[in-house]
Amino acid sequence: MRFGLIQNYSSDIAEIADAVDTYEAAGLNTIAVAEAYSFDAVSRLGYLAGKTRTIGLMSNIFQLYTRTPTLTAMTAASLDSLAPGGFTLGLGASGPQVIEGFHGVAYDAPLGRTREIVEICRQTWRREPVVHDGRHYSVPLTLERGGSGLGKPLKLINHMERSDIPISIAALGRQSVAQAAEIADGWQPIFFDPERASKVWGESLEAGTAKRSAELGSLDIQVQVFFAFGDPSPGALMRIRSFLALYIGGMGAKGKNFYTDIVSRYGFEAEAADIQDLYLAGRRAEAVAAVPDELVHGVTLLGNPDRLRTRIAAFEAAGVTELLLAPIADTAEQRLDDVVALLGL
Image (cartoon, rainbow, N blue to C red; front, top):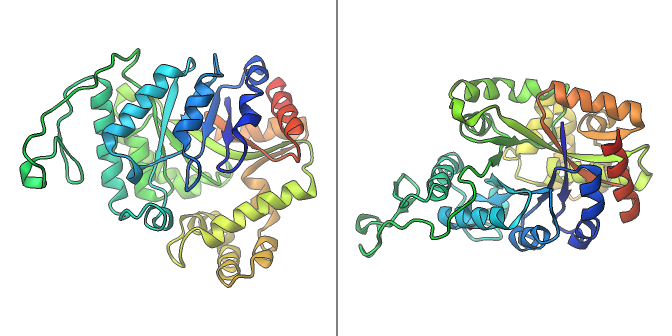
């Protein structure tokens, strides 16, 4: 089992950057930087690359629609060259509320776009002249598809130390998870309950793995998880409940919310519907209160050393290869101490 950290959208990058030496001495493997409609992840990853010596960096996630495929490949190649511990390209579709609402780009064909972007990235990293004639992307852009006819195939100017930068895809739906298991180096689920995950994603993972190239090796499963060493404070627990309520209730329209679907398939169908109804009605405090305790403890890593060991073993038994920790203690000092204590186990 490997361990990493998530740098949240709104948290101060300096909190992690200033503690890099301590994290490296403790054996942390990865720092993943989130990106939504926030500060961009690339700038912060570049900043961290100058601070780290052994820790790998990861995007969590670059959204499919906000960069061209070749820019995504260039950015990943650049970050991989800057980070001594290497870079993992985390990709995901996000959702229409962000892509259309903030970026003003149509949210269409996430499955097809994901596959083509992965193909173009790997071609770029092999330093081949990039030639791709797909349904969603044409490189070079041909005259028939709206180009001037003057474009020509080009290859990445820079020589790379490695051409196999890992790609980890954030996916939740049945088809998208199957595709991630087929084509990606890693898969990033959210709200992963090791006791229930196979109910939701087991068939999809099996279907995708059956099509997986042996050259890719086994699939990494990288799970973001709220974490506290010992009993979390009431305020910390409330932050977890609020986060769950936000995603279950507010990250999507009625009938179009991936997170509501996951929680429903875990067996909390009535509770998920109640949370969503309350949240969309503006009764957010009631929505937070409606989050079941069993769900909170199922998707988190909380407790004393014995419970932490038991929970880590459960994640490992469910196929998880890396836990990306989101510490929830009330102070920066305690968050650092909690992570170091966990790595010490």
